[in-house]
Image (cartoon, rainbow, N blue to C red; front, side, top):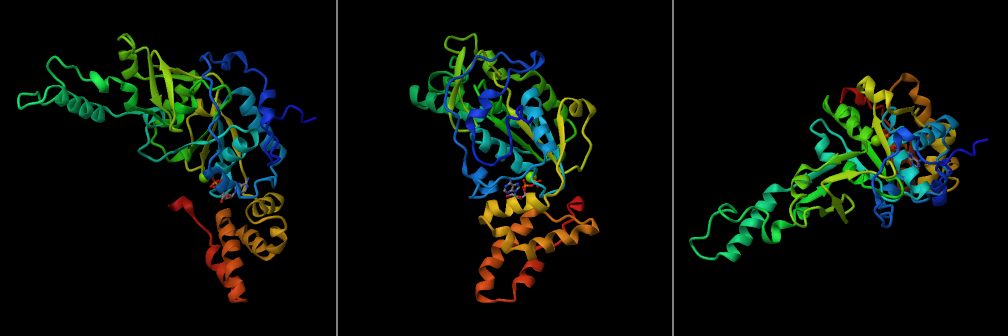
Length: 354
Ligand SMILES: Nc1ncnc2c1ncn2[C@@H]1O[C@H](COP(=O)(O)OP(=O)(O)O)[C@@H](O)[C@H]1O
Ligand SMILES: [Mg+2]
């Protein structure tokens, strides 16, 4: 019945399943020439969030699974909304872990974030300084020009390798023509300035972008292919100053629901609303971090965490995890302090005011 699900939320890695993902619909097929290379391995930031015992299933309901898979099939970004601590960001790590898609590219958004930050940075000043140094080395003496002006254009000699001064951001790296989709987490998009969602939409629609600095260099000898640094710290070739994706990345954008997004963005995303974890899902999270049976051992804290939220106050899951961790250590020395410590850590959090 659920055979079509590629991501099944089982917790355990099953990297072969992504190979069963059918080709994209024609309107979401991208023509970047695939860049061979291994998938960068999943890193500690994913394991920290998923818990050391990542084998424990995160227990997602069928609607959540269907929407995640819809985004995978349709090559559309997944917009995940929900209160802080409901597990939005961790979802990106779960997908990468289970489908063997490697390191999660993370792009935390703040009000100053611009599209360009996610695509790439060009260190023009560093390049100029290197050009000046190289120039001094080649023309020593007091008459040497102050900069790479005159007959020595910037970018000559060692500094001619413009790729050394370009570093792709998380979005730019996600759009490299990889054979398997990369996972990109655009975290807290609702914190962005008003233009970012629309700017982002254009790039995500096209699945490609230009690096004008490289486009200009493309006609010069040796300028057609330039090796640039990725967000993973690798060097990859870029041809003709454009990056065009091959397998469309799995893009997960999160929002605490602090603001409404423009209609064109919503139309082109798959929208998933995550409720705060309760019951099975919460028990699975506790076990993921503290081992099998930890949910049973901490029923009192879980009960306290879930029962007090009838007042509509927000209480992120992190508080419960912190309380379980800390009480494990304190009760050994001071029995009876468990309740007190839990009360100290588990407090309603009205983030809507922050
Ligand atoms: N699938 C999961 N397995 C284990 N722990 C999880 C899982 N999902 C969320 N958590 C834990 O719950 C907490 C809140 O999750 P997070 O993704 O940061 O929420 P949000 O992004 O919605 O604020 C984190 O500490 C994380 O470790
Ligand atoms: Mg988050």
